[in-house]
Length: 117
Image (tube, rainbow, N blue to C red; front, side, top):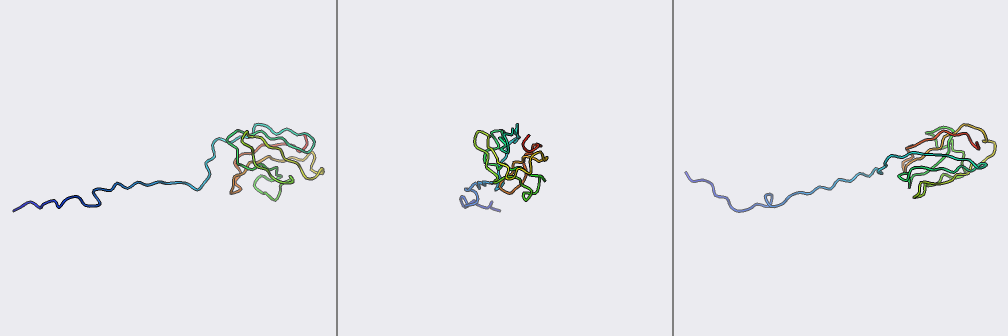
């Protein structure tokens, strides 16, 4: 009996598949808020540099963006800083939380504070 002959290379023997997998979720490193200092109703926030592109907000209830007490949430700058202005002075002295949220409004860092203090 004759051994079967190899007819040369087939396409499957020549190609090596290469897969590239990418996540649509943003990569967030260790994110932390190191300080929240008040000057009147303006809160100056210092976060880790890895917090850049996240949005800072001050909320009465952490997970509820409707409980925000600021005029407008703001993006953290490349140096990790931003400042937020509380919209009404009736909130002075209230307990609140400074939060950093990603594009999907997921809270990635929080810092307890007292408004104006």
